[in-house]
Image (cartoon, rainbow, N blue to C red):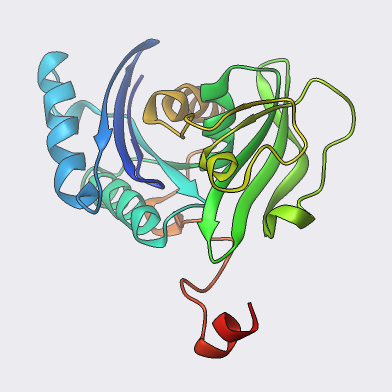
Length: 219
């Protein structure tokens, strides 16, 4: 089973290749260059594994929430690769990928959504799966609901922007990566959860990218 995975929901451009349980990945801070970096990264990974794009069995992408442009880039690349080859596509939550990247069993994933808000979710590892304890939402940091119980670890740049939000331990540098995304996508592909490329879509959570003049004045 060979899966290409793309994560471009933040300032990082991250691409991974899953090959029967073996993983390789490349990532770098991209600024606004995700679109020009992602496919060459995949080509390098395929060449290193002595594979071609025609050998892929599926394509996974970080479905968000995150940067609107970044989400569209990852989804568009996944659709382009999949359409041409009739491959299934798997969209994976960027917040879940960040929890997987963090490694703790109870994770509060928090990404800076700009405009005084964060993308926020609390996830708990139960067996091999992540379960949402606080479903993903876009919320003002002060209004973010604290998950029940103890032992929660925060991760994501939302904590760099707005502080620890009452948590004792945070890793603000953790970001969603294609390596974690591929690990999450593989069992879902095996379970038949891939979709037709035409049905793949980002999960924005919010439908606007900037405040109006009146909204800025009120803030």
